[in-house]
Structures are given as structure tokens and as C-alpha cells.
Amino acid sequence: MKDSLSKDVLFDFFDGRTTSIQRKLVEDWLADPHNEELYYQYLDEWESRHPQFAPKMDHALSNYISLINNEAVGREVPLSQPEVRQTSIWKSAWLYGAAAACLLIVAGFVFRTELLYKSLVSGNGRISSYELSDGTQVVLNANSVLRVPRLGFGSGNREVMLEGEAEFKVVHTERDSRFIVRMNKDYVIEVLGTEFVAFSRKRGTKVFLTKGKVKLSLPRGKQLYMKPGNLFAAGTNGGFTLTSSPTPAPFVAWKQDMFYFDNTLLSEAVEQMNERFKVDVRILDPVLGRRRIGGVYKARQAEDLLTILSELLHLEVVKHSEFIELRKSVTNPNHE
Image 1 (cartoon, one colour):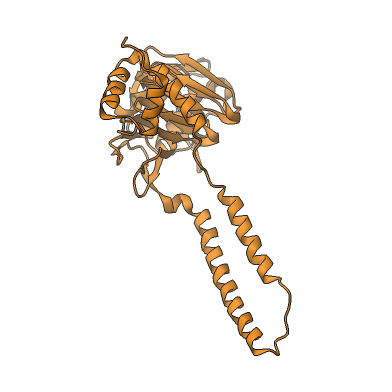
Image 2 (cartoon, rainbow, N blue to C red; image 1 turned 45 degrees about the vertical axis):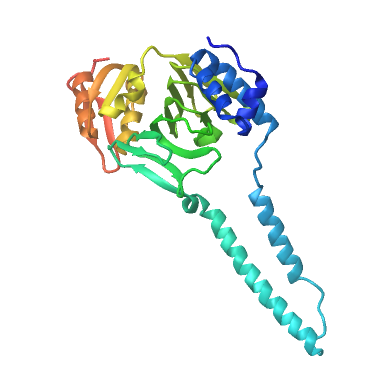
């Protein structure tokens, strides 16, 4: 392990006030993975002392509307005086203009996600790869959306929003700006440069860390740090687990159109199929849904996996008008 740097040097580095020699010392020191945890510790302490300004947009809009309303309900004045009437006309014009501007602001708030971000989309049953403006590589699983700033990342944090599942290979920047992934229900991933898989769908949230270090912010202000091999999983009830996995294979199998089942509930296997291919496959028999399956299977469309499951578990595929049902085969009524 290289000699430790003083906190003052690192704080100057975060402030952008180091010399070229000092920056080189920090880079060499950070190249040792043993120093990474202390680096994050100092970075968190520095950020707590230098909070970023976050304008309260909704509050500002409310104040602006109140200002307009106060102007609109001001005292009435006699219209017999020409100069007063002219003032009133100009005030009315200003109010109409302000109201129009206010409507534009409201529309901007309603559609600000669409206005400020562009959507990178992976279609039904397809895997899509993208390179972001900072060089970060992203692979999107089927039926996933990643929203990124339309004008690229600025000098501050690099922030994106994920709906679905994606693998990220985040690059460092010269300013060590953080890469932030916002997911559903206030789950936020913060990294500098690392590799991880993030899952954010209706049935829960998952993060698997392949390389580097991740700071994960949870609902209600909770935080935790992840190390390589850690798997974070949260359900719809808010509870979560943090476990370790010896291999990333289960979490990246989808990149090769594969399904990785390891003693997986059949009901969960069906959920994965529905998410990837946007179909509506149901198991109406709860006992059947609790059966488990193992193995790695290639399926580029829903029919491929339905065929595998039906042959492997002796099931029938019944197509109804609005959904597809998996049920026990009538030729094997006693098979469990």
C-alpha cells in the first residue's frame, strides 16, 4: 500500500486547487485499490461540507403564481383618468404575458423529463448497447429505458434514470465526477468508475457489483456501500438483502439471450419471461408456481422458453384471448 495522503491534499483535490504534481500523487495513490475505501470516506466528508444547491422548483413556481394572483386582485382604480387607464392597460398586458409565461413554465415542469432527457430504448426481446457522451458503456436488457441528458453531461454529476435492467461500465473523468443512476422508489446508485448491473422493475430492485465500489442510497435516507460480488435485492415491501455471489453469470446471462435459473421458482421464471418479451403468461395454479427449475436456456422469443418449460416440466401451454396459461399436462395429472 502506498503512503497515505493527508486529508487536506485530498480536499484540495476535490476543490480543484491542487497542482499538477499533487494531482499525479493522488492518481498514483488511488491506483492502489486498498486506498479506495479511504478515498470514498474523505469524498463523502467533503461533500457533506460542500452541499450542492438544489432549487425547490415547485416552491418557486407556487410563489410565482401567488405573485401573479396578487397583482390580478389588486385595488380597483377609477378609469376616468386617462393616465390611470393607460397604466391599467399596460398592467393587464403584463399580466396576460406573465400568465402565458406561467403556463409555459407549468408545461415545462410537466414535460421536463422529456424536454431535458432523451430516452435510450431497448425494444421487445432485444438487447441494445450504447456509449454515453462521457465514454460510459451501457447495455440495456429488453423493454428497458435509460434517460440521459439531451445536451450531454455538464461539469457536475453525471445523472441518468433507469427503468428496466442494464449493465454499466462507468469511466472515470478528470474531475472525478460521480455517475448517478436513479431508479424507482428513490433507489440511487452513486459511483466514480466501476462495473455493475442494475435492475429496476415493478417487482423490485437489484444491483450486482462486478468491479469497483458503489454507494447505494435507499428510501428513508438509508445508505450502504457495496463491494465486488455483492448483490443487493429489494422487494416491493421495502425490505432488502445484501448477499454475495461467486459469479456474475446469473446477472448478465440476458446479454447472450440466455435465462439463468438456479433453483428458481417457476412463477419467477415466468415473470422474467414477461418482462423480457412483454407477454402475459400466467400460472393460475399456486402449487405449480412454487415448483423450481434450474439450468441455463437460450431463448430469443417467448415461444422458445415456453417450449422449454413445457417439455422440461411436462406442462401445457394454453392460449386464452387475453393471456397465455401454463398448467399441468392432462397426460401427467399426478406429476409434481
